[in-house]
Image (cartoon, rainbow, N blue to C red; front, side):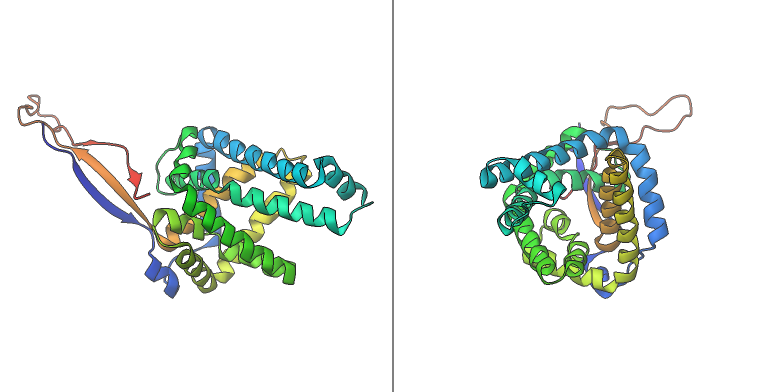
Length: 276
């Protein structure tokens, strides 16, 4: 039997094109494609997204428990507006900060699943653990991102929102392109600046969807959360491109061609995978 043949091919943009702004990013097209692939992959993708959401909520509650003795102290003060001291506010900020950082490996797994969808590949819930192979680098990257975004928000909330958008591609750049966290942050920021208007339009739509989802007692998040990750996967593909590795196994030498004049057997294509 012949040895497997490994080949690679590239889909979408590139770092060089993204930094020059020479990529296609049409908000309507991106959102329409994300809507379509969300519907196609919702049942395989939703369990992973729910797992990520519940894990982050658990880390958030644990952080509040450690600092305040009980998470209810924070939520009671937030809902009633009474007793909402600087200490409680700081506890909420720190709990959210560390939950964002510690959830990084699962966040990477879900993001890579969305990248699968963006290049036409299926996903399965178990792929969420793929992010654990990037545990250290993802934790470092998320620590830097959360720190930068938190600093921006402390200056002015809109700055924090802009930085959240501008740095949103960094975590995927670290894992898929194997660049350093600092380089990934730089590339994500510069690429966003080149396409700031379409990126802003896309994120405004996503923010509106989150507001509507919250207004439906959170039921809408069942669609909005997977949709959000798929949007990010498509943006990343269009901006920076995705390199796929394809393994094909040629037929054996003793395999005979068809006798009925039909098509010859094609090479067996194994599952496509990212460089990551």
